[in-house]
Image 1 (cartoon, rainbow, N blue to C red):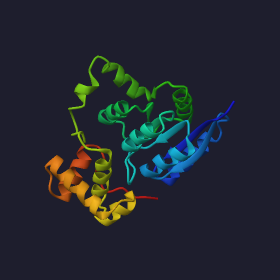
Image 2: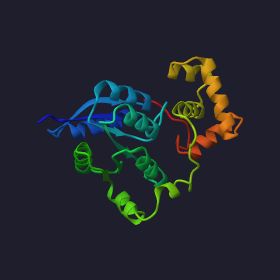
Image 3: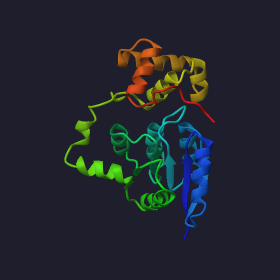
Length: 226
């Protein structure tokens, strides 16, 4: 029987190394790659075609939720399992809406993580017990209705605009954003203008606040790499 191939996506090297070490003891699971940001996760998924991507939410260049959405569009056979320290209701709702297969809190044991990987690889869903309880409590309530509460969503923005918004909120200048995305500075400026018009926000500080409110980046400082 072929092992379940897994791609790890987390911006902290020590976290990736720890998860890899835990999974290496499982004979039916093989870690085939590691990504340190959301954009790399999308690229490596296209190249390696893993059965499961274990994805953090808070990552630089492209947050885990948008990366997961792009992965599921580009490689529908791959299953995305979110593993994050941030398990609030709004994130759980977003994970469900984009079609990810599960959501685990980072305090999860190695045994549960391995079980989750096996379950989602077989087409099932898997959530941490606390999240499962909350989902059962909310079963009768429409997720579409719930989406309007809490943080403002980035509804109406294109995938590219979400990428530009995250890079702006991370403090990237237009030239840096253009280099990250492989597009021209003029194209970045055009997307930036569209963002400001759509959101009716006309300064960088306002765009950053919106990105935090929409859950595109985490509050408490900009992302840092390895």
